[in-house]
Length: 261
Length: 219
Image (cartoon, rainbow over all chains, first blue to last red; front, side):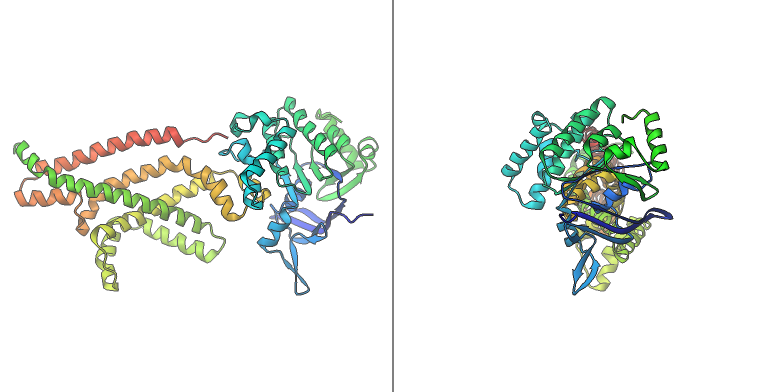
């Protein structure tokens, strides 16, 4: 069996007095599609943010492709990672945000080409060619020169996905990427993600309230509550036959709230 | 006392010399304030506590003391420490330093107004801190603050008569010297007011245009 691409070992994280994660451990295999579900405040988004180095951990270790994320080896000892080490590690990971976070002062094409040109030294022509391929994949080739403000929420999110892909990460993190969208725009984004899952062997971690999508998309579902993994397993097992009482009551509430399963 | 048009014609060339210096001091002072303000705003955000606290204290100190006192200090006290500056240079430094601390507050507000998500997206795109500032944060923060900065620079323009206290031959100083020579105050001082009024009104029109052009950002 191959080695895990992400190995999280007993990490903890507090915001002030609130302990979000307390000794959490989990592993992700290369190419695996993982859905993280659970009530808000359960720590699932925090895990993605920690993997993207947007939040620091208070304790524990994370390995990505066998290398420490927040630590590095120096003279045989593990020391906190330097900014340079973090920059190198971040190349492996891309993230798509709930609120898109496109750069509003740059057109769609520049949003996508900026990072490859600045961080990988890509020539403009090559970066634009790649960006156009990605825009084609998300179905927005005709919007290359549009400004973000001229796009719908669904279109913005598809551009954001293309922007993250432009850096060719091994791991993609999707943080509630459809939560801010009008219901009729959700499917266009989910379709892009389905296509991505079918056409690439990228490892994907998904925090979502779209239970139906999580069911179809994920290889494995993790149910979080209060910073702990309460239950995990194949989508069918979690959604159709949850064993834990907390999982059952969460899914009941979600269905009652009108989310599709 | 009667208004004397012949006298107006006679002193006009001298006053126009003063107008030139006044405008020059305002432009140079504004440029210096814009650069210093950005420097102060960035240093105050430094993760190094000693740097951010020191710069913060100095900025509060400068903002909390009168410009006139600072001008006297730069022009009359610094020579005691071996730094002798020409009047206009001293004046521009005084204006730039004083208004730079106000500009820093404008920059601070503008930078704080850039949503946190922009910093996070920049990080997810693996941009360095420098790239994040120059490509993401400042291009979004600067345009909305242009009107507020311009406002301060108009205020600075109206404070340039203070430079007459350190012998800069700006408009007010020229007017005073012709007035003292001919013992006629009504024409020179009225003209000083008129010049300031005309230039201010013109600047306000420019400011309104800047507000329309840069005041709001589309997201």
